[in-house]
Length: 273
Image 1 (cartoon, rainbow, N blue to C red):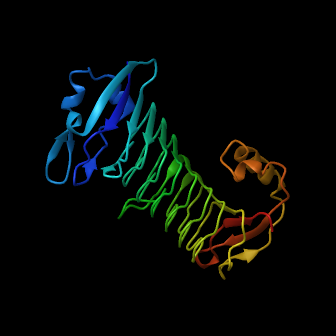
Image 2: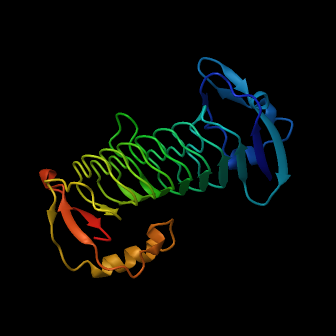
């Protein structure tokens, strides 16, 4: 089994589907066959060897590293089930789409629809993420259903739209309609949020470290008896990225219930208030 490193040597002038570039798949391909793998582009195909310099090292576990700016490479880590995939640069749209296992680490920015319909595993984005992270594909009814998405920078609009399960962590700001139509799961935002927070939210938990400029009118303050939940929740967050890793032992947050316009039973928690 091989650990594969792909170093960008020639970026095409169009988008490429990178869904074939999975650690477990490439680890089983011979050194002579790797450069011949064909990737689908916009109306044409490209050989892997034409786009990347390829290096192999024997390893016990499947791993893949992509070095360089790969914002033209969409669907990195799509349908990934095992192994470790690291992008030392930027990634395109649909990173981690429907992944169910393994770890995907993007050291730069990711495009739109990162972790869309993610089912398991972990996706870490050390830069910013585009719109519709952890949401549903256009026309589908369910967004993220499992796993963890950790964004160290900012997230765009419609974060976690239609999310059903899993954990989303954003250290920075989130755009408009964050946690819109949330069905279940946990969404934690460390910075500012845009307009229409929790629009159409039915269940689930949204944690803010800073109070928004306006509480949605369809959310009502109150609720007691969530001390045990808060203790367990903050213990989980203690293993996660800052600022959430410092929440263990923190005082109870302010709690709001909503979105009452859709008979919502979700909760909005505001810490440090």
